Amino acid sequence: MLELRPGCECCDRDLPPDSVDARICTYECTFCRDCAESHLGGTCPNCGGDLVQRPRRPAGKLAKDPASTVRVLKPAGCVPAGA
Image (cartoon, rainbow, N blue to C red; front, side, top):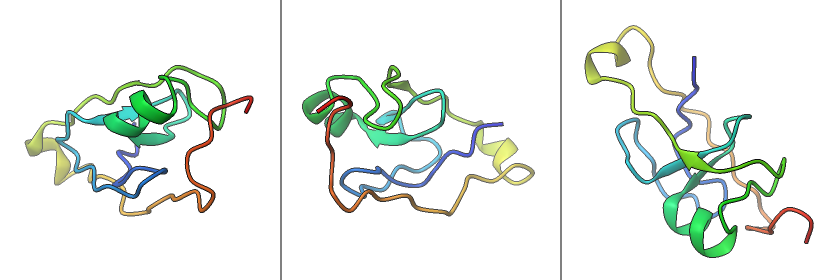
């Protein structure tokens, strides 16, 4: 099950579980749409994989399977993979 991390690894913008602006890679690295598109060109800076829209968990399922509260922030900011 996806962790649904609470914020962008680049700018620390809040990304609640129902956000349509969250982007993830296959390792669940999480970024906001602005950082994913503007800074990263749709590529995860950690693994080089594609960043795609994160699925939203139905509100009724969050009680049983809550989103993560652990924030991941890269202090160096967004650096595209291979840069």
